[in-house]
Length: 247
Image (cartoon, rainbow, N blue to C red; front, side, top):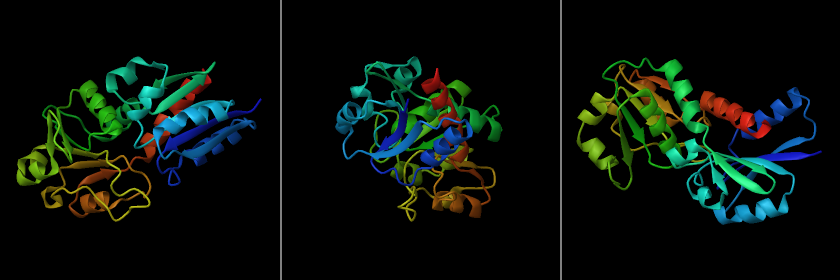
């Protein structure tokens, strides 16, 4: 019996998810399992996708739909409710249940890489669905954080405020980019922060993995910062998604 899975987003051709799951299905002998990259111009198109694809069993969700998709789901996991974003959907008996594996995947990967000590502080660039997952991970790790966004929301600061007050970057030893700035195909873009404030004491994590070294990470490297891209996080969240789909 054929089973279909896929990734939904606005632009998904850059994603490594299909390669990851195609290789997994081949390796595990799951010849009737398929993974597709599905571009939706509007999240409301998910209703037609579900109706037209009866063998669809699960979806990954990427930007900009991790928050918007929640309105189209029948049920949410406790983590998804707490975080306020969904990156995994399980489809069973016509019902859609949303989960969030981003937060645990980020927590696992950052914990192996970043030497968390008393006094650690983080800056999170961006305030969308991926940012919400990172925020929850930092709460679980007891790392205080500041969210930087284009338009100031309650409890956040703008990029202008960040750049006008050097202490924000100076006092944060971990900086995470959760925006799509720099992702294929827009590889010349990068978050508008004062990179001259970076030092060899900073750890810089970009959730983007394609390209492997964004301009954001290249600038961090120039200033001696320790840096990491999002490929390991992609693999960890994908494995967690598979655990949900296959149980």
